[in-house]
Image (cartoon, rainbow, N blue to C red; front, top):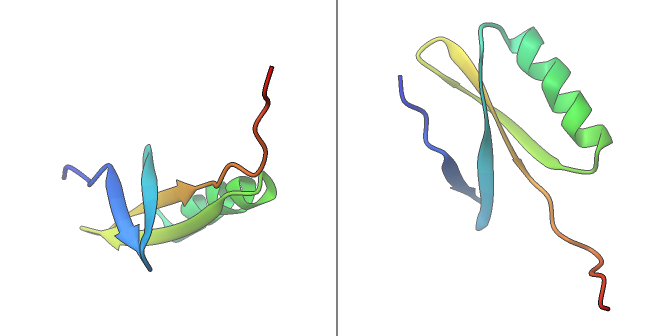
Length: 64
């Protein structure tokens, strides 16, 4: 299985986190960690394995 690195969902671009999870529980643990770091997250199942896709919008920029 070769997962897509990028997926579009609801007009938003999500990036695969690079890991393949054997169970929904494992994927859920990562999902909660990403959400606590202010990421938007969705989990999908492909070929009986779970993938986590994330995105985060930059809310502030630093100008020097």
